[in-house]
Length: 221
Image (tube, rainbow, N blue to C red; front, side):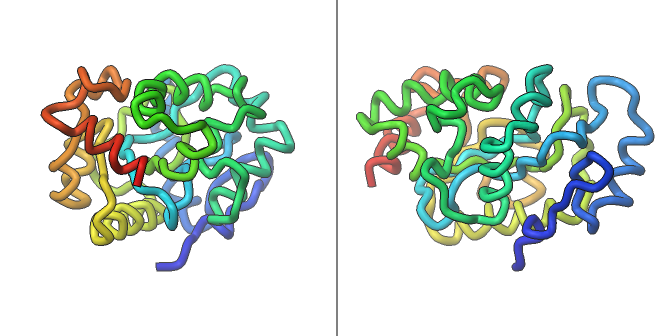
């Protein structure tokens, strides 16, 4: 399946794939609260290198912080976001772990949530960045989700394709959030999940059975 995100452009100050435009604008027209989509930020349907990642984390949709406008307007950070969308090489494929972007909201969200995983695997941020990938059920930012379970826009199908590809290739896929959304994509996403999706911190206490140990093994492989 072709990657639609190589066609993403900034048009009139907003980022929407042309194939999503009608659906997204119609969706947003019905919202005037925290579930309204923030289209001035670069969409983040996935983070990481699908060819090298060995641990895949599933979430719902990228959040929105009051500091995101500053981060997404930074030329270096924006360039990395766009390269990631096109599956192009970067120094830190899982860019929230790049020290150059440590002040961004995405880094401040991800670093504490993956800290125990990195410590247990005894690997560097750079190594973790090579092995980790996150895939969102929905690509556009919002402060709160409020997302229906049905597909909202065409570009979601590419994210679902990536997830199925990872599962078919035997990668460890762990659902961090939203059982009811992901089970409609592939029933195999029900196999591994954090205990408390509201916490979203990856730790032994928040992982059932030997799941945390399996995640550590995946990162060391």
